[in-house]
Image 1 (cartoon, one colour):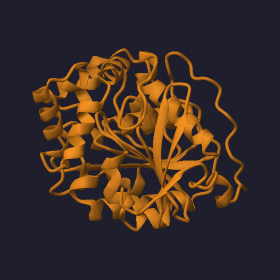
Image 2 (cartoon, rainbow, N blue to C red):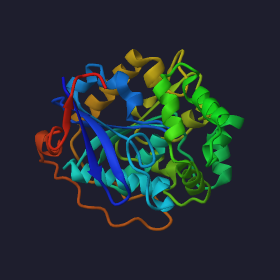
Image 3 (cartoon, rainbow, N blue to C red):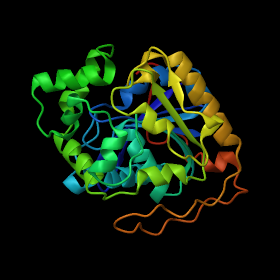
Image 4 (spheres, rainbow, N blue to C red):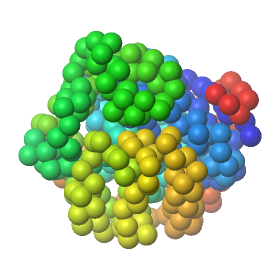
Amino acid sequence: MTIYHSTVQTRSASIRLSESDGGGAPLLLLHGSGASRKVFSKQFNSPLAERYRLIALDLPGHGASGDAASPADYGIDGLASTVAEVLEHKGIDSTAVMGWSLGGHVGIELMARHPPVTGLMIVGTPPVGRGPVAMLRGFQTNLDLLLATKEQFSERDAQRFYEMCYHGAGEPTFLQSIRRADGRVRVAVSRSLLRGEIADQKLAVEQATVPIAVVNGENEPVARLSYVAGLEYRTLWRHVCHVIADAGHAPFWDQPEQFNQLLGDFAADVAARPLAAPAPAAETTPPPQAAAPAAPTSAPASARRGSHPGAGAVRSAARW
């Protein structure tokens, strides 16, 4: 199995991404605030990378990607637009998405405003409505969560954020990623949630016509698990919100074997479904731009995979 690394120049920033050469359908992995694509190393170094075309990118202002020229590109809608632009550049017109924390919010926005998402798994992400009251319902009252709104991090702030995300069980590079992240992202993301500048994410997941999978660790410190479990999902995968024992905010890192089994099963179920036209976008402010036409239901899987992951990329060994 080979992993390819490449850089895509978008209107917002240069985006660094990694892809496996798996033979199956695309599966996009979106990281959380202060992280990078490298948090998914336990997915890339697993059979998932052979079964699917795994794609992980560094969001603008994170990892090896560039910082955005405009703070407006750091809102959740701006991040989703950048991801959509990367997919378009790679020739991928449909993909399942797994979004962790901030990546889950970006994935919901991508599903609501852009046509490529055929299934969405959210991890550590409470799909909240607009405004501060809705946020209080979905997020836990954890003082460390206030760090997600702070532009400048002290070394102590970075350490606290690391502990909250990984319970001290991550790698040193994860702390480095937190230090590297552009703090303007945190400000713009919190503002877009508080001001309701994005799709109503609660309605988006409740009214979704594609499968929605919800996976959290039992020690999740960010999302209220009772809130997440109480939403009225129309297309909840396997009709249950999955909770992984002995895992925190990053169950894909804490318990990769169990998580990878769920992710692989979800991706297989999504790939087995016929393609359909996307549902009307959830109510947004401002109104979404007109979406591109959906891929025809007769399109073969090979046509939906896009260009070969090695096109214009640097090849590497299986490990990062």
